Length: 335
Image (cartoon, rainbow, N blue to C red; front, side, top):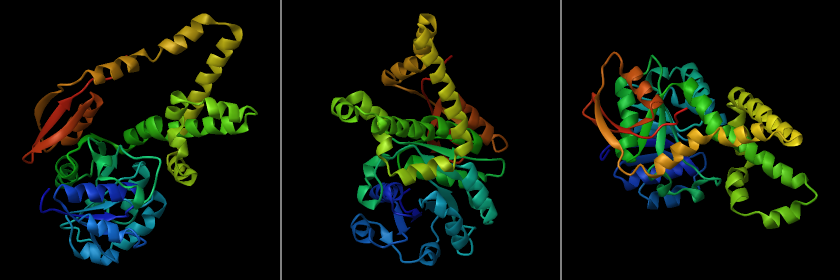
């Protein structure tokens, strides 16, 4: 990605880390933030900072990455819509919810130049001062596409990920992404918050807090995130999260009943049911030499090819020319 100009809108934890990572890897990064306080440090990191979105769009970046909060997305899109050169600039984002963002992009009249993206990285902290280019080391991204996604624009985003960031990606649709993100991110944030709420309300809270060690730390880390940020993330994927929480509540009720009644068989089944995931994690630990294959991509079926690849546990690690994807095979959860 050397010589490519990437525009970053929003220099928070993710936007700042991405901008610093891309700049360190040879991309020309131009950034705008709603407040200029990160600019001094960002400029020292090789990032060109501008005062207006007009200046950012006037640089005609090949790619603009929206790293602003999701609640600000409609405003950002309406401001960018008259400024973007749609012939040269592709639009993507880093939001944790994809279906809603695509709807907002289409409503702003920018659907033809949009490809969704979501880097699976982050910390419980926020702001440019918490940013770290190392946050994107070895990161996996989801790229989200639909039947209208332009292939060349997909390539622009995929190359930013695989070349500009030296990262990997999977290609999925918005609905699948949002269900999966609810399962592995949004719902766990609610569960972690429920745990710290339970401790807060417990009369033995101070004894428990003093005794808390690794298990508690690992299960509650994300509950230390700014609660307004977590609430916004969960609200934006509310339908999927509430469905999962009801499934989880039912599962916990059943194990509570089994414990109450001494149903040892049901208790044993509860603790053994997830063995396929334990096997998967063990296989990943020992997966030191993943197999790579080159997949020719067909103009008429590239979306379905890459969607099927993702469902098989495969990851896109590089592009060879315009029509060949280097795919890495990884262990899968087998039930």
